[in-house]
Amino acid sequence: MSFVPATASTHDHGTKAHAEVAPGEIAVGVVVGRASEYFDFFVFGIASALIFPAVFFPFLDRLHGTLYSFAVFALAFVARPLGTVLFMSIQTRWGRGIKLTVALFLLGTATAGIAFLPGYAKWGWVSIALLGFLRVLQGIALGGSWDGLPSLLALNAPKSRRGWYAMLGQLGAPLGFIVAAGVFAFLYASLNEADLLSWGWRYPFFVAFAINVVALFARLRIVVADEYQHSMGQLDLEPTPIRELFSAKGQHVVIGAFAALASYALFHIVTIFPLSWILLYSQQSVVGFLLVQIVGAFIAAGAIVASGLIADRVGRARTLGGLAVLIAMFSGFAPTLMGGGPAGQAAFILIGFALLGLSYGQAAGAVTANFGRRYRYTGAALTSDLAWLIGAAFAPLVALGLCSQFGLEWLGAYLLSGAVGTMAALGINRMRNYKS
Image (spheres, rainbow, N blue to C red):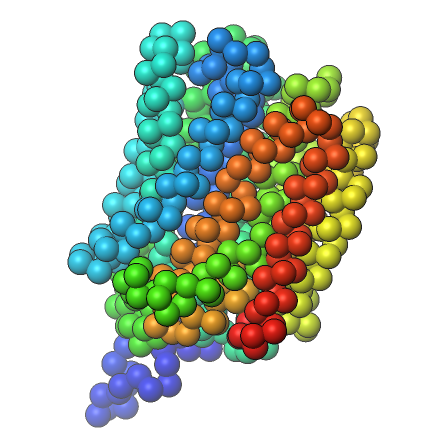
């Protein structure tokens, strides 16, 4: 399969003006890039549940310290659309390679900066302010790291294999979580509490910086290649003015964001929120619970692959809608499972990760065909940003706050709201006969 359109020019000697871009190489770039970003993402999320309440908010009780940590965690998702807009301008002026280099350098710098931050005991509120500032920089950098590789794969995929190619980038999420959770499990098993809170928690952030460096070169090798640049240009996958995008396709940005809501609502409910809950309201071992989550992440990876096969048989929108129904059903059992002790909580994690993999595998760009070629590059990026902001940014904060005050029934209500949002958006998309 060629990644150069059939209309590509040729020389008189019969050779193509631009060599073909191998789909396998693009797929590797997508997975490596997303896995490195998600590792950063989960390192901060896990630390927000397990470490930051004691290091940065020791003047509060554990519950309120965790809520404050989750508020800082959410800042990156608020900043992410701003990063997308800023770095689209950088790409327009200086090119995609410069944009990606600056974004990943900023991400690595912010992540490493967190590792060096003194805790509240040394710098007081200044340490909290710096943590929030560096978290905002992470969000801006994540917004700027959009490289268009998933869109390139989607537009060149055969119609019968679109679901398969759509799920490739999503594999980065479980891979990133497996590594991040594994590092924290190792630290918890190897260090006493004093060492963990003093210096041990900093180690995963150094690892994240090293992974970002490797990922940067792996992605730049593809992004700056002439074949890649030519293919992106031929497919019109270039930034468009934000005002023009929202004027022409604003309704599609909103529909796309809500179409993935069930997946994004579930995302942090099975990864970050449970860690805070078991630490506050159970006697479970953190290491043991992280290992259960790692098993769940492997299940999610298999489910993401399965989602590609399913979507190619029944359609991406139908797959996403069907999983929203299953997540709505799961929301009815979620409070009972989460409140059912170690066995029930393990079941909640494993079932939740399976549903997450099946739905998240097709959540990215399920309705981005609505944008057409001209608006797809910027539209897909902003749609993803808004889906994260609406569905996932405040999930740990809202879930923990509501459940600690009013009971675990609100956990089910939160998941149900995401499922309803997805079904409503897909219904509107179908009624208006938009593409998917």
